[in-house]
Length: 82
Image (cartoon, rainbow, N blue to C red; front, side, top):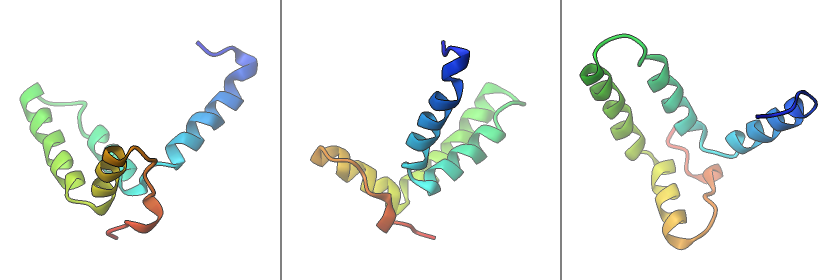
């Protein structure tokens, strides 16, 4: 729980961490989450799996995997597929 006085700095800290992530992956995650409310669990699982596959094929996904394997922070500034 965040105290009221710490709400803004905490929100900015979280936003900063999110902004350091792949813009491509954030977009995919937003599209995925926006469509999971209605429908059967099986349908929504299949819906999400399509996005997982899309994400896996991106350069940012490859960079994240390589960075993890090498024990370093991912650099998403040079891997955009757009």
